[in-house]
Length: 282
Image (tube, rainbow, N blue to C red):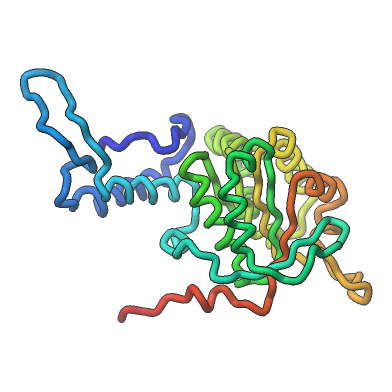
């Protein structure tokens, strides 16, 4: 196939489950292209007498192949690949971690643009994000949109919390060295998104300890992390018995979040999934 390594990913990482998808992409995108033979457009003919490669540039098919291959390697869900790069006026409120709101609900558009515009500062300082809100409010869309921008320059990874826990048990209880290697790769990735936090079964002490270790390690190494949860962050006084993120995962994790994270609570009155619903073509 002859495609180049994407994002300089380490060759010892177990990506066998993704490799077949990349092969399929090559057959679907590059192989049938009529503008080129191998994903490259040559600006001059190759000299047949000497080992000389003429000047070349990426064909459009190669650009598309590289883009989608990066999404596969970053584990970004396929249903987010083709969504347009706009924020659909998703609204939220920003809070500090003492339940102080920084104003009325606002569009996430300006915050998102500022975050990706200053990506170098974000990466150098490990600035991280915590998104909370009901299903369909646009949390995962925003997170994957950010990843799709950062992936052009950095190694990124998206994963469900439950999947992360399954990998942990496979690696350390099942003693699977390949999964352990992949876990270590994910732990040290440039920018990581952990979604669906709170949908796992009741977290054990081991789970909480491992989660704290991951967050602390990434914060200490100034690695940006995006956390997404459906858990309530704060409750009203009359609802003080309601389960919240803080009382589920503990004060140690809460203290880590206070250091480098910004907290955004997405508004439930805007159903993002209605805006992105696809019509059938049959």
